Image (cartoon, rainbow, N blue to C red; front, top):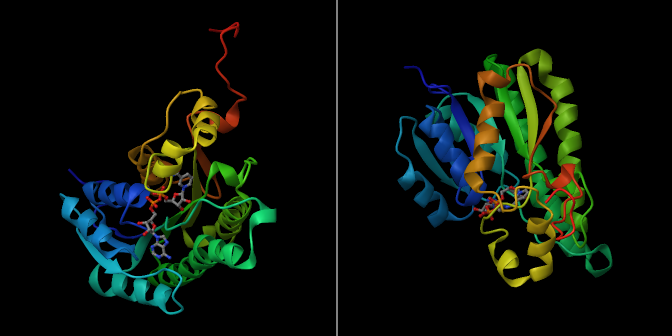
Amino acid sequence: MTERFDQQAAIVTGAGSGIGRETALMLARDGADVLAVDRDEPGVVETAKRGNGPGRILTMHADVTGEATPDEIVQRCETELGAPRILINNAGIGDSRPAHLSDDKNLDGFLEVNLRALFRLSRATVLAMRAAGQGGSIVNLASIFGITGFRGSSAYSATKAAVIGLTRNMAADYGLDGIRVNAVAPGIIETALTKNRLASNAWFSDTLVGGTPLGRVGQPEEIAAAIAFLCSADAAYVTGHTLVVDGGYSATHFRPHPEDPAS
Ligand SMILES: NC(=O)c1ccc[n+]([C@@H]2O[C@H](COP(=O)([O-])OP(=O)(O)OC[C@H]3O[C@@H](n4cnc5c(N)ncnc54)[C@H](O)[C@@H]3O)[C@@H](O)[C@H]2O)c1
């Protein structure tokens, strides 16, 4: 049986943990050959170890914010796996602050990783995809905080809203090249990014988990499944879209209550 990503070359950033790791594993399980990139070398090596084919998982230890990194990533992909057909812009940092407690260094950190690096790698990849003439699919990791407001998340929210804007714009620019560009906006997902905060901050977990109709945090595999769908032929007519995967958090004003008429 032909796998849905049969030997397509895929780049996944932030593949050493959480959503990126599960996405790399799912794409490889479905036949893609994956270049798994992360600044955390043991993390990305562990991802490759967990891979069980049929696609290959090659590791690349790199910081996506490096000036030369986007070109190096694309070159490595082209040399070892072929022209990129899939790019998952997943590397990201979280845990920001309200604007009045933020300084320029904090703001610049978010802009560098969550926006500038994503923009630059998308540009390098689109050039390679266009040169190869086979089309492709890009999925950017946004967040529900790029769609709705949330307290204490100023720079993070701003970068994720920008990612949604860039997604729409690149969909318009590259559709005629057969390149689809979409985003996934996760709700609260249990990964290294959120684990400590969920465990130590009752306000954070009560607000987010309590406000989620499905009543639980999401798992990274559940985001990987949405990403893989957007890359697949099943989503052949989907571009410029932001797919929210959040257990219903952003679609509702849900709070369980004993006097709730529906309970
Ligand atoms: N976990 C959530 O609840 C949640 C919600 C919404 C959006 N997201 C987004 O999903 C993406 C993945 O998050 P996660 O929860 O899996 O986090 P995570 O911390 O588990 O994984 C992020 C990975 O990115 C890597 N990374 C960070 N900066 C990098 C850099 N400069 N260069 C190379 N690698 C770098 C880290 O080393 C790590 O392995 C992020 O963009 C995040 O904003 C997560």
